[in-house]
Image (tube, rainbow, N blue to C red):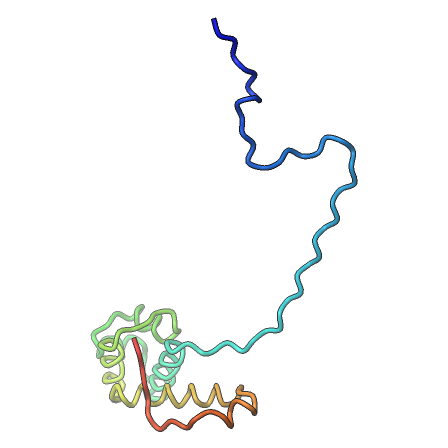
Length: 140
């Protein structure tokens, strides 16, 4: 009959075993120094949603009215306005048309908002080196 090895002989530790003698506890690691907050680039969906909401409120229309006219659900339009959903071009075109805008008008206004926000935050050295753009370019 074979003699079985004790249980601890068959265990392969994943971490080194703690020292069994009375040694001083290790010094705590220094706390990481928080980095200076960097300016976050605005998200396109936030800009487009802001433009849609501002236009709807300027026309004194309800979310339900615009959603019904655009034939999209009211909760989805609400999420688009709040920048929670990345809407397709079909949804954006329908929402813009429901507000009496073209898709180009909507995107142009969002681009203008982007330029306004980023030019306010741009450091002086960057703003002089940047090229001026008259158009809008989107990539998917």
